[in-house]
Length: 119
Image (cartoon, rainbow, N blue to C red):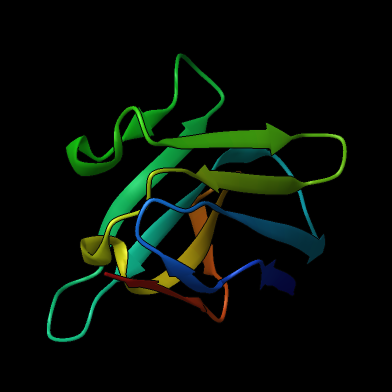
């Protein structure tokens, strides 16, 4: 079993900053990526930022230059620094963990943390 615990969401005014954190625990092995997705009301879940083991992180175009993802591989944690927040960033943010086993990849999600940006 794998547990992902998120923290750091909340209410902030437009232009402000928040930092999300996610800690993974349980049976952790061969992590290939950790990242963040979000889902706004009435919309599909979308990628925000993903840090893989190869190359630079991937960001949604809408957050490039404003959000920064970072991983601590020793602690199995991932953080998302969100600056210059906009009302359209309002959503539930989900931590995502991917591990590679011998026969398959495994995908885990956190419970989600609400981010609300007021105008």
